[in-house]
Structure formats: structure tokens, C-alpha cells
Image (cartoon, rainbow, N blue to C red):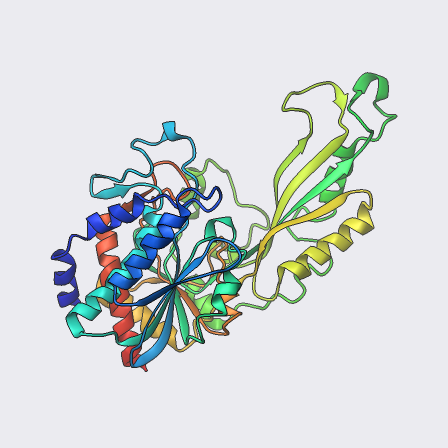
Amino acid sequence: MIKQLRDWVSAQDLDDELADWISRPSVSRTGEGMAEAAAHGLRLLRASGLEAREVATGGWPALVGTADGPGPHVLIYGHYDVQPAGPLELWTTPPFVPSVRDGRMYGRGTGDNKGQHLAHLLGLRALRDLTGGFPCRVTVLLDGEEEIGSPNLAAAVRQVGQPDLVIWSDGPVHESGRECVVLGVRGILMFELRARGASRPLHSGNWGGVAPNPAWALVQLLATMRSADGTVTVAGFADDVAPLSDGQRAALDDFPVDVAKTLEAIGADGLEPPPWLGFRTRLTLPTLTVNSLSCEDSGDHRAVIPDVAIARCEARLVDGQTPDQVADAIRRHVARYAPDVEFRAGAAMAPSTTLPETPYTATIVQAVEDVHGRRPLLVPSLGGSLPMAVLSEGLSCPCYGVPLANADEANHAADENLDLDRFRHGIVAAATIQLALAAHA
């Protein structure tokens, strides 16, 4: 069947279909092209044999396609919105005019996420053409707001029924080129700490040592939140974090990483403390990060006591933490150590965890291996954040990530691209996973 799928892919003009999808802007942050993209997304769902509808969410609509089949109910999640293009002068060719160079298609959304969810749709189309139907009951959910944090995804999820599992494809394969099956994502809480001093900036010679300096207040507060060895010292921050399972630890032990080479590539001399933690283990743990420190000084450097100092921060969350719980812990900490500093919670996503011991894991891993001829890496958790908890927690079912993009896809950056061989292999893999899940049942 894999050979038949490969032959089907070779016989189609699928690159043109991808280019057509990329050429339609869908920037959720600004609204550029969203209505036309939603209409085209519905056409793509129908062309793959799905009954398609637009679901109102209170924001940009979600697109839902459904089809019956004898196997388990599989929800395929993707998103049709994209990042803004950014500075046009950094693009070799215009971001919404797809171009092919050296076996890659360039354009905004190629890897994130239009090319990846299109591979799943084309995999379904191939199965329909080759077998006359679908091996599993399928729901495809295309989010219109992932790039702005999926604030209304829960409204769409409530209308898709109860799946047995979720499959999503986003992000790249391992930097070595080896395929991955991803079992979780960290959550995130963005927040801001804002300290105020006098009503205006003051001459530091005339007022130094007299007027309160909010920058020092902020630095001293931050120093109470994390110790020098890297331990977060905010009470209640990580009290209920779940320990790693045996399967998660085994997957981490199997994960290849050259720490010295990785540090050299980013121009760093060493890892964050503590030094004894393994590289991949770090990406399964909660973090507290200062993203930027600044004063409202228009970007110049004057000899003043600033009137306002700002720290923009984030916490990455893991199983056992929620954004509300972590926000409350930080709010209490600030109130205790610096009651005059303002805490402002921002965008947030909960973490999502699927254990390797979950029954479908081995089936999906084997299907990916059957297509590519090598065993994929099992990734207990991505370091980054995606809105998977809305699905894994809201629907109480396991979620599996099968990234289809090349490691250097440049998502969110200029010259975003997708290796077309990976796109074609992704179509075969998506279809093979459906067949394997039906056999598993």
C-alpha cells in the first residue's frame, strides 16, 4: 500500500496545489486575506472527500471537515492562519508569491502550517482514490487563530465530537533530518512586571540616592524569584509538577544531541544552571525566563533616575501546572517581596502531555518507520508551546505530533520554506498512519 501511495503522489500535480494555498494570505493578526483563505480552505477539505463547514468562534472562524470510516475517530489538527510577512526586503522572493528553488518551495505558510496540514488532506484524498473510502472516522480541524494564541479554539473543539486521538503536524523534524513523533508541548504564561518611581525621569546627579529608582526595585525583585543555581524560588510555582514516567525517561535517553556542537552553533560557552541536567531533560521542565529589561527612556541612555522600569517575562509550563495557578503564585510572590511592583498577566497556553505508554504510540511510531525506513525519535515534550491542551485536556484524549517540515524551514522568519520531498513523503506518512490506526483497532 505504501508503494501505491507513493505512485499516487508521483502522478499528481501536488506542488501546484501547495503553491495555490500559499499564494492566499491569511494573517490572523491583521486580518489580511482571512475571509478568502477560509473559503479556499473549505474547498480543500471538500476536494479530499470531507463534508466541510465553517465554525464561528467569536474570532476568525475554524474550518471543520468530517468523514466516516470503520476505524477509530481521528482528529487532525492544523491551522490556516500564518505569521505576518515581516520586513519584505529580507525575502528573496515575495512572501505570498510561491517560488521553488533547489527542491524547496518558499513562501509564508509553507511549513507553518499550510504545507503540513495539506499533506494530511492529500493523504486522505489518496486513500479515497485508492480504496474508495477512509480507514478511520476522520475530523479535520483547521484553526484560524493559532498564530495569535488560539483564543477561541475551545469554541470550535466543542463542535467536533469525541475523538479517540488527535494527530497534528507542526514544526520541524530533528536537526539531523530524522523523523519525530512528539508526545507533548510545554505551556506558557507571558507576564510583565512594572515598577514605578517618581512621576518623571530625574537628573541622576541631583536626585541620585534621593529619588527611588524603579530599575533597582525590579532587579532586586527578580533576584528573589530564581536562585543562582537555576531553582525557581516562587512558592507554589511547581509544587504539583508530575515526575517523568519510565517511558519518557527512556525516550530522553535515546535522543541524540551533541551539546558542545549545539552550544558552539549559538555562540554560548555553557548551559544554564544547574550543570548536571541533561540537554533534552531541560526541555521537559518548567522555566522562568526574563525576556527583556528596560526603562521608558525612548531607547537612549541618559544620566537619569528612570520613572518606570519594565521586565517582560515568561514561564514555560509542564504537566501539573496551569497558567492560572502559576500566575497566582507569581502574583503572591510579587505582593510579598515588592508590593509596589505591578504584575500583569499576558497570553497563556496550558501544557499538554501524552505518555509513551499510551496504546496508540507504538502504532504511530511503527507507521512512520514503515514509510521512512528508520525509527523516528520519540519526543516527550517540545520546548515550545502550541494549543494542544485545548484538545488533550478538553477532549480527554492523547495527542500525537508528527512534524513534516525540514529542520531549517525558517518558520516565522523571512524565506520560510518547505522541502518538497518532505512534503511528498509527508502525504504518504499521513495516509499510512490512518491505515495503521485502523489495523490497530
